[in-house]
Image 1 (tube, rainbow, N blue to C red):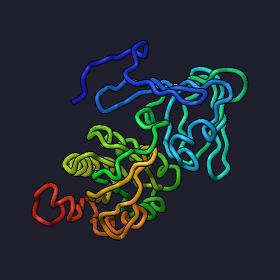
Image 2 (tube, rainbow, N blue to C red):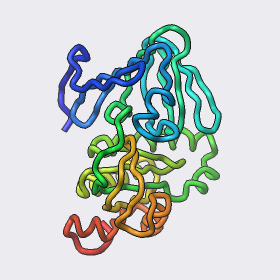
Image 3 (tube, rainbow, N blue to C red):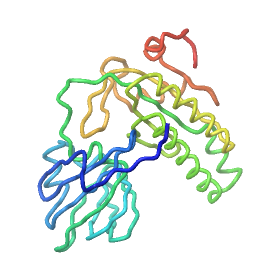
Length: 267
């Protein structure tokens, strides 16, 4: 339940330091906001990659820059400079570094909980994964046109992310018109899926939602593999679950049904 609250960055709840930088964060229930400070000379591939062990940064960043300049380079070669008073989004798969002699300071909303954290020590973590996509997106684009589709897709994405945040999930991937999110309980995932279906319906869209419970390994906050359920790998599991979904319906795998102690059919 949303509530009136405030916390000061003068007394951060969490502080993590790494080469040429640090992150200070506070949590407002399910939301965690971070203040990231990068000194001149900071570069993700030099200062954070040794901590997280991935080839590039797999976090999605959304924030507002207060001071300094940071250069971002995506894995596909796309580049951008982020400067003071810029609001920005950086997708997973990138390197970044401070430009010039000024400290880079920014506030972020999406990466504070996991940025610059080492891989989890545990062998695996049992979570419930949620997958969604829009039904008939190609036909809708042809019917309403590219500009109207872009506006509708932005509204859809905002509505889906609102549901994920409301049910305390963690978005960890998107693919055009679909989302993948992770929850620490099956009930939250299923409720989120139902909320997504209702929210999409209000926009005149139909979505498929699938849920699956299994064991994953977290690397820098990103979920890898489903060793307890064949076929292995999220990339192959997602279409398998989504295929079972019907328009405006959500489908739970047997593992989710078992967790919820429900009859073995779509929720």
